[in-house]
Length: 131
Ligand SMILES: [Zn+2]
View 1 (cartoon, helix red, strand yellow):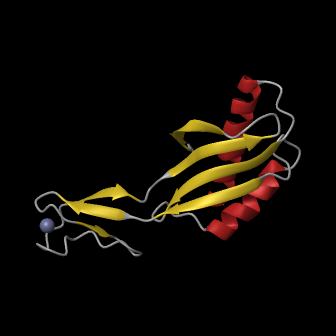
View 2 (view 1 turned 135 degrees about the horizontal axis):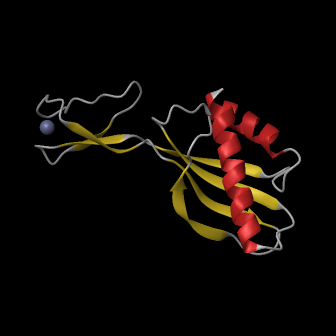
View 3 (view 1 turned 30 degrees about the horizontal axis):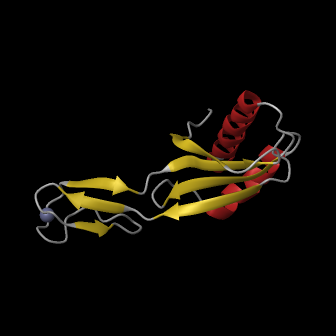
């Protein structure tokens, strides 16, 4: 399952960060940016995340998923638009398929909150799936 491998990758990255920080007793929440076009079903991800957390520092942690709307821009016009789903990648102004995706494929941890201190903002890091 796609969401399961993402959930496990998120748990792995948070555990690694917690180990580096040291003294972390429990992770309380993880904020994740999920692009509209990342192909992730939020409910499935929440379910898988809960499973992936069992037996780790993240057990019982809350997953806060922020949805990032997909936007595309045209290379020749200055226009940009919401691509929606399924994505519309032809420019609504000139009709050309030269669109560039500006956002919507995000899949990154924005911040992690753990018991030993305030929320720590991390540099957004793309989640690489484990296969
Ligand atoms: Zn255009």
